[in-house]
Amino acid sequence: MSWKSSKKTSHVFRVSGSLELTLDVVSNETNPQTAVIHYHGGYVVLGHKDSWSPVWLIETALRRGWAYVSPSYRLLPEASGKDVLDDALAAARWVIENITPRIIIAGSSGGGYLSVATAAQLDIPRPLAVLSVYGMLDFAIPPYTTLGSTSGQAPPLPDCDIVEQRILELRGKPPIISHEPIDFLTDERVVLIRGIHQAALYPDLLTGELGLSAKIREHGLKAIHPSDHRFFPVAFGLTKDFPPTALLHGLADDSVFPVQSISAEKKLKELGVEVILETVEGKGHGFDLGDIPPGTDVEAKETASTPVIDSIRRIINFLDKAVASK
Image (tube, rainbow, N blue to C red; front, top):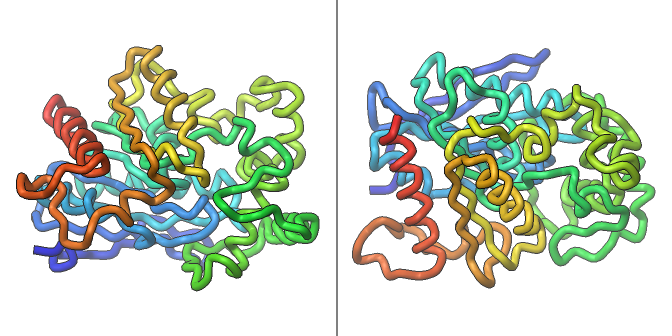
């Protein structure tokens, strides 16, 4: 049975001015004991709560009687990093207060960043587990602080100065929570993402401190004020008490480099945190969406073993153990 036939409800979890932020809850249970919160991808700049939904994760949750929750959040560059993280944290707290305190915090791409950043701020109750799928985990590393950086196969923008000006003009404008690109080659917000990479603006946009990226290039992490540490969870937010963490990444990902998940795993291991890193050779960004045929039950015995399927199965087993231990 497809997850789309399951009960789905929508709830307002936060109001900002005239903007209502909602989350969708998919569940077959009246009172689910565990919930998976998944923050959507889109480089924190585009997408919406239903964008690029990981069907394998939704179905994993529903088979176990867990709820699957997909929140909206305000998007850069109109919103500040504080807005974005506050929205993500508010969604998690709404689930804790209205569904269950037993939560797994997950996210893909830009949502992977939000999963780790939210878990780093939420200690009562501590999440059962964290799942990052090809997450943009560390905006203090060179791919995000080096001028001229590109994302994916897109060539450098010849008019990056104009795009950068447009990005900065959008700061503080009425925020949006949804943008679905029709054409990834020409979409304005896709161009914004390319400009943010090329002008190394992620640290600046998240913190609101223009020029921070240049300071990080020159002085390293000490350039980041303690009040802004929350925006750099891998650099500052990981502790020995961080929840068990699962990381999934394709080794051919040229949109979000796998070194981010590899480095996060190393830091978590050094802290003594339970962690699993699953990397898949030859797979790029979004591979878990494109490599699993519709209708595939990744847990079924009859489903043929592949590197992608096997990695996802190990991730699921890790999450099962984390949930069972609490």
